[in-house]
Image (cartoon, rainbow, N blue to C red; front, top):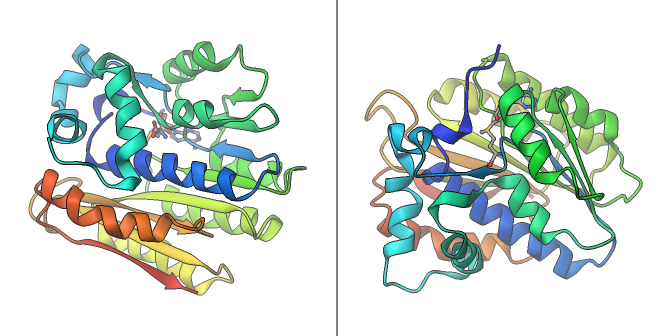
Length: 275
Ligand SMILES: C[S@@+](CC[C@H](N)C(=O)[O-])C[C@H]1O[C@@H](n2cnc3c(N)ncnc32)[C@H](O)[C@@H]1O
């Protein structure tokens, strides 16, 4: 049984990285290509979060994540600008998670499929999105299901893979699902999020993907603290396969600003790791 609830972590430094990149990347893809797109969110969560609820305030990770960015007087870089403006307008009682970010960017001819296994978060997400005919919310394993819906008829896709990595086998399953989906649509953009907790597991997963036939891999890492500074997550990263035009430049311009605002002292880097 799954115990992870994203509501305890929403708006933290990892969400900031992931949500800004998702928002910028999705917009860059549709700006460059007018064809209908399928968006897949393999681990969708609840969709909207009240950061000031008991759950949001329990560990209050958002107070050192999104909050400083809403309070800064410094002009945000392009990567974050429009996403942050949206977060500001929504306010902390309705912080948008990944499926809600993508929903707002869907055009009339686009589709989205969201997978979520947790009963409560699945119910919340379903009631948020079920009236939109472009969106399917499915209570199923996102990793096992991803290859089964590929290649999509659109032959154009953006996939966010954002597991909680609650179970250590997630790392191997991510690798397997990503490879299978890529083999069915090698032009798709895949955004894989990973936590920096235990380098052994992440490097093995990312190393396996690097050695595979998957090309055009761009890796971003943003660590609030150096590895081993404490137990638990000290940072996070994203592996982007087929990054859209403009995303790497925007990420590289934004990371120093973000590091300063969030007082990051760990690894902060981004580079193509495979051409
Ligand atoms: C990190 S959270 C998702 C956060 C969301 N992507 C966002 O950014 O707003 C991971 C979610 O995946 C769900 N989950 C865990 N294993 C899953 C699986 N195999 N398939 C689908 N959902 C899963 C968890 O219940 C949790 O809600």
